[in-house]
Amino acid sequence: STEAINDKEAYVIATAKIDKGWHVYSLNIEDGGPIATSLTLSPSKSYTLVGKTTEAPEAEKAFDPNFNMNIAWHEDRAVFKQKIKLNTQEATINGVLEFMVCN
Image (spheres, rainbow, N blue to C red):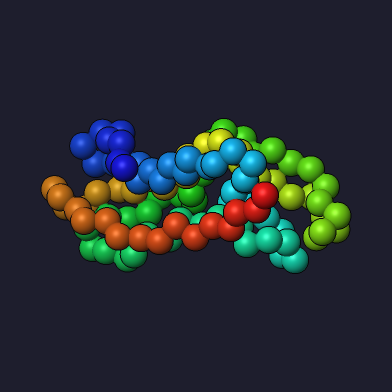
């Protein structure tokens, strides 16, 4: 989905509804761990990315002996937002949300 901030800026939003007993990894996972979630928007003359993708709510964190490191994840629901600056009146936005789940 999208959410207008003003007539020149908006958020592109990917909302994950996560089944009970499962979790989706955070955007912020160190090398050597599971695949971090990423939201990659295709380049376009219609918009410019502003900052980095954010996530809410704050991810849960704990030590995972499988990876021998601290891991962050979301349960139930996660919202990933990317702010964009609109360069044209209308824009078509394409992208990929990559994620890894575990139970």
